[in-house]
Length: 281
Ligand SMILES: Nc1ncnc2c1ncn2[C@@H]1O[C@H](COP(=O)(O)OP(=O)(O)OP(=O)(O)O)[C@@H](O)[C@H]1O
Image (cartoon, rainbow, N blue to C red; front, side, top):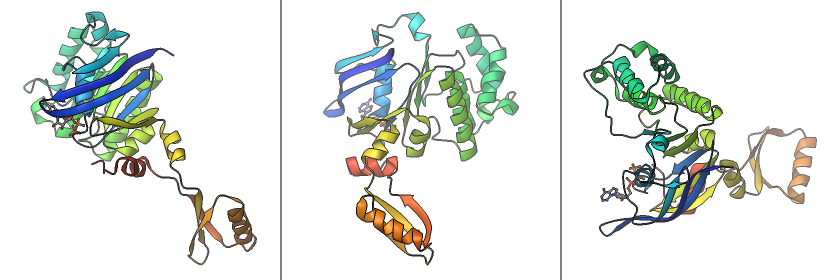
């Protein structure tokens, strides 16, 4: 499958601090790739290098098969970026701001309503940017990032300022972009978000990738070889998945004593702490 991003032995040093150390990964067309790590682990630095805003100290980073920094205008147009530096005109309305971007990217004005629907902000179309809440501004920035239907979208913590309802809207919007074949590079602290959205995730800690795989493979790899059974009299029994456990299960079932069974599968958050010894947030 076509590789959209290819990163090899990337290193970034700021003064005497190594922000990225030997970072390597690739992202295939149509993937949602999650870059997960606590504050200061190097997520934004990676996005900045991949979008040509920052030079790497060493290593290589290619986007659409070309070294970053050497992308043609045509390739740059295929990229959308959501980051925390706003660039919206505060004294213009939501609609006026997005229309300016339609003009810049040669998209019809009808695209404004389409993207506002995706971020659940159609009602706010006439509001001035200066009157929007932080979460609304975040959603407008997201709408702007995919207004020109980019093939590759960089999202730096897209839901960090959002409530659960609007977070869900964004997830739906991102699913639609995935269905349309958009490749998405997403950074987050939120393990649930990574689990529901991402095809593969990389765990970043102190500038290094510690693990990289599908959420499912990671959960399986770190899952306990046990089940927990709650009995009808309220006891919790931990049972091995082997032949001994089968015997215990058979006994409990024949006595009709099982109230519930749960697999002791870790969350991505548990795995992250296990591997890095650090919490995410
Ligand atoms: N321009 C800079 N000059 C010096 N150090 C920097 C610069 N930008 C980032 N750093 C340092 O590099 C490390 C990685 O920072 P980065 O912003 O990539 O982390 P992050 O994972 O995106 O964190 P957050 O989740 O808080 O945004 C941090 O220790 C940070 O202090």
